[in-house]
Image 1: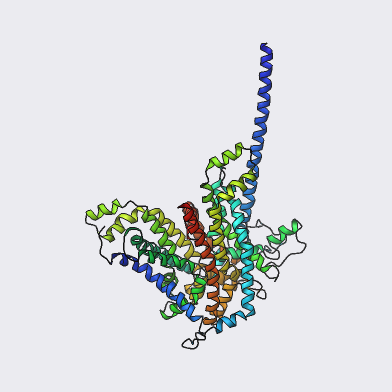
Image 2: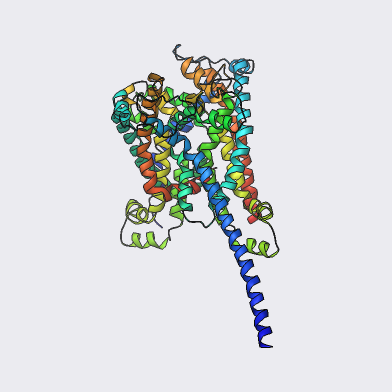
Length: 298
Length: 291
């Protein structure tokens, strides 16, 4: 009786063990399939940059047009990078890009927040009309506006200036919308008690509200920075003085001048993505949360 | 709360001045210019009525570029609506290092079009990776001149547009996925539903709001496509990859036909406006159904 019971016990134990073994095999298989897929897609997403980087590391003696293509350089060299720095005024273009991006970001933070504050926290006539008018600007494509804005920039003497690059993008409807949402979520008691203490509207805005909406300010800053940093069409139109070029435009010019020297072009491209990649790696979680908030603008 | 009657307007002033000067005023001026012969050489624009529009509708290049743009839209939008859903499902799993993959997929989004374009020109080169890969798996026999042949140029650039947009739309879907309650999947698992059934019956229907957003955003973006074309093909060969914005750009800034280019710009605006209005109608319907 006792042995029989034992026997049954062992049998059920083994079958349970088998199925749990099968289960864990299936589970491991699923994980492997997932990682294979993830790596394959990663190869597609970053592969072109890796291929460009490999080309930038190839020495002058190596045939970069070899077929089949060689991913690993025969004798890796960094000499293409100084050559690229000599081929185009990288530092000048970097400075132009930084100036344009930083001022576009700062002006957006200030102007969008200022406009959003009364829209979120004050009652006055015409508020809804103004808000709807601001939002409606999102429906107007810049590709229609670029012609009159160019004429306006000529009239105002903004051609080939930093102001000409910055001002047309100094306020965005998305930014006003984002900051209004942020101000709406702050409890009203806070500004009322501040007003009791004798603070005026500007002090409430600047000292009480702005520090409370920092996450939205970061989102707005990153959104605007990426937009200004990568902008190509407007600089292409408003700049013809090469010393004012931003990095994308300068790099585009480089490909025209050195169309046969792919090592230099590749090295120049890699150099010009370093700044934005560094910022992305440090602040990646803000980039991704910002993209989600950006979607509401659709 | 007490404040002076002009206080709200003082706060609104700087932002509204920028939007007024660089969006509202130019918008009205663009519409006015589209009825004139302005070309930057004559000092003042002359009103010419519908002449620009009449000429535009008889301009083969306008129709060619508009057709190319619509082909672009029809090919790129479905890819950008569907592929990122599966990408988002893939990176929404609890796996070690998944954050790393999410960030890696987002890299093309933050890179400028110039660098992305250069990288892909090199991939598409005659002795490049694309020809090598497709030849090794036997899809093509001879190397294809992807960017310099009239049959492939437009489609080769489309592939890059999709590649660069995937990460952005993936993140939008990811937010949508994370809002789906887990118990829906648990119940389906108990009922013995397969992965595919769960995706079709639960994930996709629950993602509908995100799908609408992505459809509208990617449609408007497709209508405005310019940078990738300018950088990779220059609109060629033989205008085979030239888009509507490229046409506007060349008419306005190469030929200085500002009035004519504005008319084409107004056409572009009207098409994108249709998408924006569809978006508004859907958003309003959703609000009503919630209320």
